Image 1 (cartoon, rainbow, N blue to C red):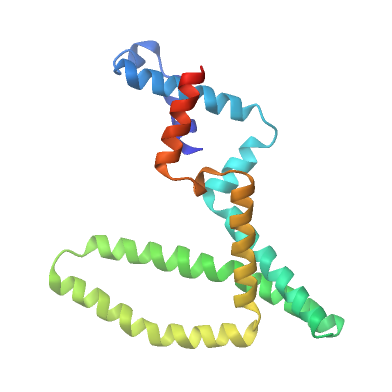
Image 2: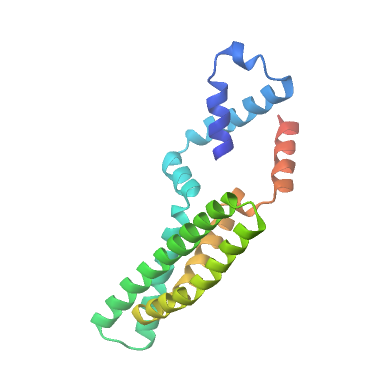
Length: 191
């Protein structure tokens, strides 16, 4: 998705600027721009590509998986309607926000801090601080477990749903670079 948008933006530049690119790169830009134009012609392309690029689709699947798991477990245990609604809502919220906060927030912060450290002493301080942060994060996960005890099952259902969807839609997320290059080569030969 991102390469197609980039190629479309490059292809829209004045011809004099494009002429400075080597012929192979101009052909690649034209190929990706044509693929992006074809994709844009499909209904809901902008919404679909935005959801894929931002990761929102993953969060929607995990929230849906949490809701489904909360519903399934509540029905299986024959809980009353109030407990069912509570399990669905809490599990859905937690399975959506735990990945956003832990994966998105923690990994982003770690990458930022890790790039800002150069010396062995700075790296040691960073890793020591992260190790110390594990204890309070364990307490946080205990609170999450108390608030929404079904969250882990919902998380698994949501991830299974997301990966099933990416396989069903033949998303490039599930394909290796080699497979993408082979598909591009086959498309060139067919054209």
